[in-house]
Image 1 (cartoon, chains in turn blue, green):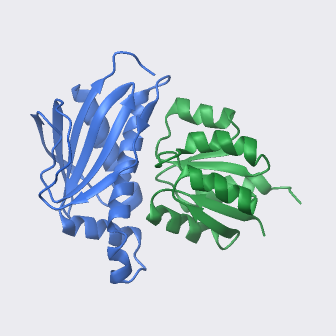
Image 2: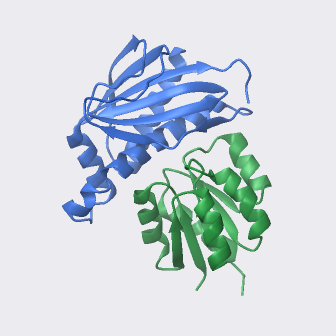
Image 3: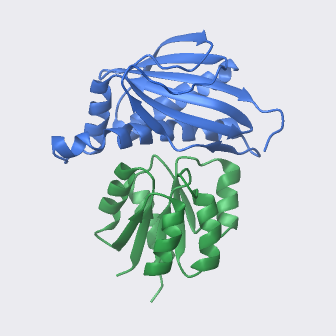
Length: 158
Length: 121
């Protein structure tokens, strides 16, 4: 995966968190690994096909997921809000990936995104792709967002 | 009052769109996938639909294509995070009235739907 692809995701995450949540994100670290397996307990998995293919996996702590939900639906009772956590963080993952896809697709290509799948708990049994991955960690006052980007360019663009 | 259907696989986004639109429009139904959206449009004959793209079963682009055939009088406003240039052009060429990219300001959605019906009736 090219370094500029990581920068696209950083810009998209910073922009979506600022516009949608009023949360400021700053880059903490970037490392390479062999698969987009997440390391934090709440995970949002999106598949990408088309001109590029692979997986993008976001992860965060439960407390950050709860804060995101609180910001998105501030008027709901805590009991109602808890039911919306997966929907809230899934939609944030969808927005960040969607924003990134605009830059990655360019003028003529199309990238197809799967709907986000949200998983909680540390013992995930999801089949993650074996694909060179960039793991980004972005920090905010409310918590850390990890983005695992395992994308490769398809040989034939759609 | 114009009647609309909200189609998005994210419950939190359906809730937000309903809050934005209900003061001015009657939201008669919601769907979380394109297949259900097509069925609901045939049942309710709404004036407009807000349609997400990335959804399970039938995605928004396929649903748009189907709706243009089955519910030609229903206006469709795409509301999606996947605002890739070619997708936006394809959606507008297929008959969508507007394309709102998430994240959006509430006013952007109100304007998108309001101008469809400006001068109508």
